[in-house]
Image (cartoon, rainbow, N blue to C red; front, side, top):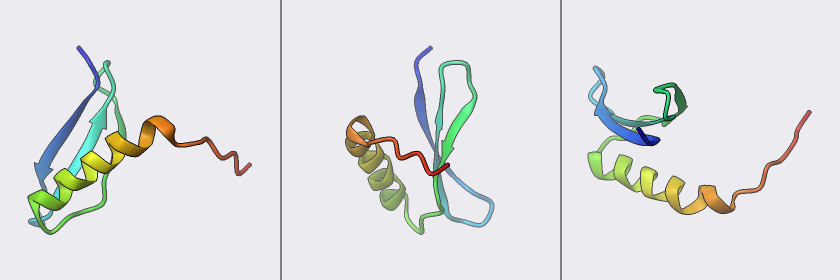
Length: 59
């Protein structure tokens, strides 16, 4: 099984996505979006930006 994004509608009517690791653990969860398209755009942004995002150590 590969990592995957899950798109879902919360009980509050907002759309969310979460990123699940291969073992099923949730490793990221989005903010709420008012539209499904907004959540889909959020997924696209993560997919586009994550491979090049630097790690910033704030400790």
